[in-house]
Image 1 (cartoon, one colour):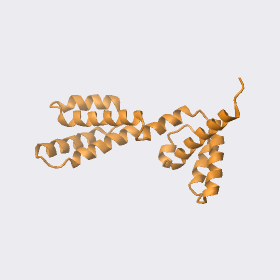
Image 2 (cartoon, rainbow, N blue to C red):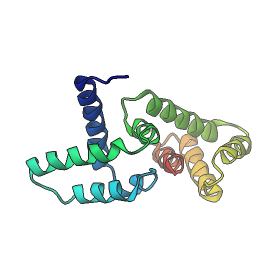
Image 3 (cartoon, helix red, strand yellow):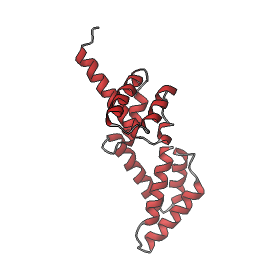
Image 4 (tube, helix red, strand yellow):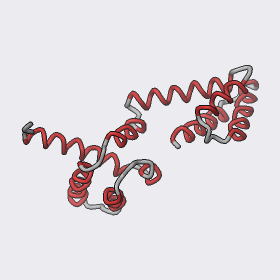
Length: 160
């Protein structure tokens, strides 16, 4: 099948936009991606480039390197991190439901057990403490600072 020049340009522009999003990610998130060594070095090097023109050239280079990668897992992670994506919103709402279940269930051990089945790497002692603090806060009609801490921890565990 013959690919038109316009289609090749569109594909390269898409790879460049993915590359630009990757260049903005923190190194800890980049570690989670299946990147080859050359692409990882190029992304690390992009942090040091300050000149607009050099950055633009380097973005083209990153786009070329992405052409040799399987970009599906990369785009999945980027969509999870993009607050305008459907995947991000779905995960965010799921975490809110977990937080509410943990705090408001009368039998919070059931909710905690369910949560730990889904996220076995979570620190159950820490979650229990955060849930107790949030429940105490709610019963005393205080601002939900502990509930926010609980949500933040649930989000950190989800990103692991």
